[in-house]
Length: 422
Image 1 (spheres, rainbow, N blue to C red):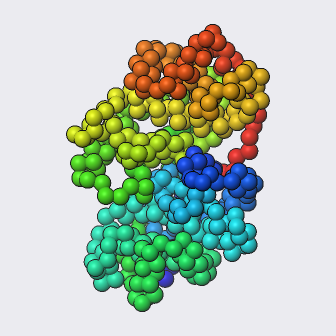
Image 2: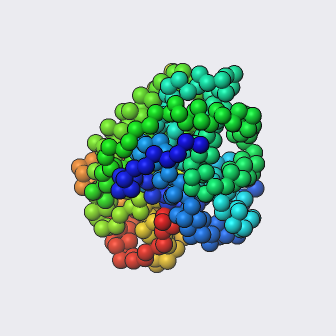
């Protein structure tokens, strides 16, 4: 394998990776996953995070040394999932954790690190080598699907980086055998029969020395990155892809204008920050999909103005729903037991779960929309939502005398939950 391109270590900036349970994704599985498995994952989160810290971060550092291009993100969140049959994917970033709870040997942790690295490397390759020049003209790629071509590229980089970091080719092979993905297995078999292709591919990858360090975010308001949840969806039509790409471009500006001020007021009021400075929101157009906070996933089909979609949503609706998803995360991080410990919130224990867990976020929204002069916008989106759940939430808040009381109770709440981003 080609040697590392040596850079000044001070110029190497790798993203901090936070691990959390993708619990909302796992809730969809039937029959329901046992609570004791959820508990075991939470108990093992520190160990998995430490394994990544010790063995995963050097892989990212050596990837940048090899290829000379930085990651664009300073912070990434990986949702660990336990849904049987669901493989790890990069968009959204979800890692199948079930095998590593069933086998706690060191080899299992090594495979976990490899699987996380593969998912991150997929994001890195998409960002930096989406158009890989004349690489795909090499014989090794001929006649293969786009998915297999990408997996070949991933494996070549992985093999080179592992060889210079932890000379252990068998770790990659064990990971491939464990995930049982045909495209990755095919890519491995091709490289086994064409070993010289690794050198040819790496020689043709453009290599540029890092010119500057990615500047650290000064504000305590998280930057939101928007991407297509493409690993959850296949077979999009050209018009769907065109409309989605246009919407993502529009949403970036819209969020900066209307979403960021709401986050600023949230943090200002409680003097508590989000645990991550950067968050990635994956956008799905699945007509049967549902929004999720863990992983962070929004359904936007009704935002795309598709000709066959009878119900169209406003842009203010998009800001409203994304903001609520972020508040679910914010309340889980900073007020994890507010609803179960606080006597005031316990008054609503008999309400349905979807109602109980929206009382606090909705109260925050009422406040932030008011102080930004957008109370009418809040009311209009609630009407557009046309949801019995949200209607009930607003009714409870108003019957209790307004959102202020809900926020006052939260202000007296002090608890610093652990974070597993190392």
